[in-house]
Each structure stands twice: as structure tokens, then as C-alpha cells.
Amino acid sequence: MLYGNIKLLIPSAMAIQRYKVLHDYVRANECVLDEYSDVVLDLIEGELPTDLAGVLYRNGNGRFAHQGVWYDHLFDGDGMISRFAFDGKQVRYRNRYVRTSEFLEEEKAGRMLYRSFGTNLPGGIIRNAFRMRFKNAANTSVVWHGGHMMALWEGGLPHRIDPVTLETIDRYDYNGVLRNQFSWLDSRIMPELPFSAHPKIHPDTGVLHNFGTLAGTKQRLIMYEVNPDGKARIGQVIEMDDMTFSHDFVLTQSGHRILFLTPVAFDMPRALLGLTSPAASIKVDRAKPTLVLVIDPDGTIHRLSTDFCFVFHFVNAYQDTDGKLIVDGLMLDYFPESALMKAYLQGDVADDGAGARFTRYTIDPEAKQVTHAPLADYEGELPEIHPDLLGKVYRYAWGIGRPITHNRPLADQIVKIDVQTGQGTHTGNEHSLPSEPIVVPRPGSTVEDDAWLLYLLFDDRTQATDLVVADAASLATVARLRLPHNIPLGFHGMWLPDAG
Image 1: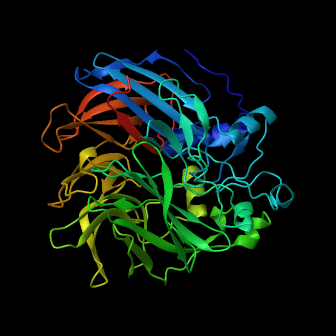
Image 2: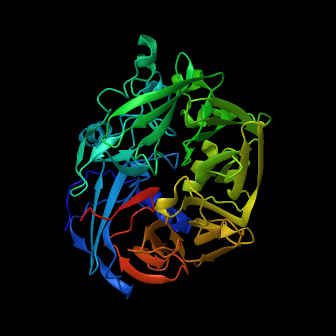
């Protein structure tokens, strides 16, 4: 049944008509108008595994147009969490927008009130000048740790979410740890400390590690630690000479934290005056190398460099037997600037052969050397691994992607990469687009790919979104269930085996 009453100002009929005739990527991301509660999904193919029990959560943009205005950037839409509860017999579904304070204020006002990372308010300089409080979209990922479920967005505070009802509990600052106290001026520039949407939980200690890149009177990289009981602290503050940007990082079982920091420059005067959004003001100097920052378990910092690159998402990392650090990621040789994101949302997806490549970096901190080589002849994004192998030697990675010889410009395949042999397999067709595949090990399994993959799939022929359960070894579909509405494919999710 419908859960809530979301007040949405729909764009003009002309805009909708244009929206619907664009590329299937655009049609896959039409706005979600309804919230559902406790809907049993229809099984349209296969059978559900009887021993698949738990809850899949996914977070992502619920809408790319809001209050009559199209967003200009892929990362700006309001966060919406989807919940899929498996009991071995059926799947029950609900979805709910994250009720951030900005979301509630805009819904009440019936118009956009806040600038976003990549979207200015309508009205030009008069509406945007000196408006430096940006919307917390709460749209990137979800994490369960310390007894809390949180919706994450890297530019501000997490939001605590009820794992059963999906109600938004509060804007969570870890008892003040995420409040900016570096100086009076710093607190005015950015009152909330950034908390990345890609925290990592150490496989042995249960400590959650995270980071944030903070602009202000100084450029700072902040490293956080949250113990298993949920008590947080700032473990380390690293002052940076230049502005950098990073979306993800890696943590090894040995305790090393590694970040690839791409050199960027924000045109702060233009952004401050409202002439451009922060994202559109970013300038990148590809003549500069990417900084590879290695933080040892004792806090010792190694500053190395590699050829210019940008990595949205890492696959995994570990320390090899010879002491070298192995980092696997999806490497771009350019920075995806704002204009590219806007064109992508409008369906202008050019096949320029510049997708993110599965790449292995080998880091020798003592010799101050970083080398890299392709892992497989595949491009991809949103990679996942067996959840028990974070920070450890592993063999398989799954994600969305395509072989480099693919004839379509979209990551429209589910791919499986053997990182030890470089071999890859994939499945998909020209009519569908998949989301990030979440890896759920079979109970009692001892083989790395003895697991299921859970992902959403938009089918252009039916204009519907389905939930797919697939075999992680073969990628074959085990079961497919139809959602009551189409939802954008979103960004990141998680599986809780005991959430009920």
C-alpha cells in the first residue's frame, strides 16, 4: 500500500515528453512519486532460495527533478532508501525518502530552497549569491554499525534511519564529534564535518574507519574511528598543501588506510557569488600527479604519487607477503566534471572508450614506488566483493560494467572478474540496466563465489524495475521479482542477515 504523501511539483508536459524519448538510461531514472509499505513483490521468474533470509537495503536518488527543477548533477537527487525483506518464501518491499531538514523545508515551501553540490537554485545570482549552506542529500549509501543504521552523504552528517520502518530518526553527529571546532571562522564556513559515504569496518576489530576532506582556513584530511559500540573520535588530522578530492578509500587487514587524492581546484569566488555550483567550479590540472597517501597503523604518513587518475570506487586492498600494498580500483584517466554529469543525466552518453578500468596498484612505501597494471579487459563501476574478505587476499569482484569491446556506451552488464587470472565474465542485454550487485554468501559456504548476487534491473521493454537474485558463480538468474513502480537504480546498498 502507499505509505506517504509526497508533494511533488511535476515538470512541464514538454519536459516530460522530452524526458521519455531520451536514452533508456534517462527513462530508468524517472522520479519516484510514491512511498510504499509492506508490499509483497510478485515473483515473475524462477524460485526464491529457501535459505536466503535477511534484508537488502539500497540508497540512491529517488528523483532527478524536484519542485519543477531538473538537477544538473548525478549526485544531487534526494536520497530514498528501499528495503527488501527476504524470509525464504517471499520478499516484502517498502521505500521512503530520507527526511533531512532540507527535504522537509522544501516540501513545506513547495519550492527549492537550497543549492546542491552540482545544482544552483533557479533565479541566477540573486538567488544563489553567498548561500553557502548546501542540501544534505543523504543519497549515497547505508551502513550498519554500533547499533545504528545510517544514510550517508560525503558532504555532511549522516542521518540515522529506523531499519524496519525507514523513518528518519535524526541528523547524527556522533555526540558532537562531527561538529567543526577547528576555529570560529572554520565553523562558519562549514559547520558540519564531512563524513565519507564509504566507511570501512575492520574485519578483526570491528572499528569503523572513515575520512572527510575539509575546506576552510586550511585544507584538512580528517580520519575518523568509531568503535564497535558507536563511540567516535577524530583519530588524525592531516593538513594538505592543496585542495584534493576523494570519494572512496581502502583499509587493509594490516591496518593501512590508503587514499588516492586527485588534485582539484574549486573556483571559490564564482561559487560564493552564485555564478556556478561548487561542482561546476572544479578545475583539474592533469599535468599534476595523483597523490597516494598511505597511513600506517601507527599513524605514520607516506606521501607517494602516481600518474594522474581518478578513482570513484576501489574494489579491495591488502598487504602482500612481501610487505607491499595491493590496491585494486576502477581507474579513470580523467576527472568526470560537472558538464559531463549533466549530459549523462540528459541521455547524452558518448562512447568515447573512457570508462573506468579494473586496475591493480602495487605500492611500496619504503621504496616510495607506485606501479599499476590492468586487472582485466573490462570497464566497470560499483564493485563488490565477498563481505568477509575486506582488506584481505581475495579472488573475485563483481560490479556493473562491460568488456572493453562492448558496443554500447553504458555499463549495462553484470560482470565478474577473477583478479588472480584477469579473466572476466558478464551477463546482460541491450534492453536492461543493472544496479550495484550486493554479494550475499550462502549459509555455511566455504567457497568465495558460493553466494547470491542481489541487484535491481531496469527493463526498457517493460519500463519496469525488477529485483534479481542471481548465482554469484555463474551469474545466472535464480529469481526475478517485479517492483510496484520503477525506481532509479541508485548507488550503494547493504545486506543485513538478521534484520528480519
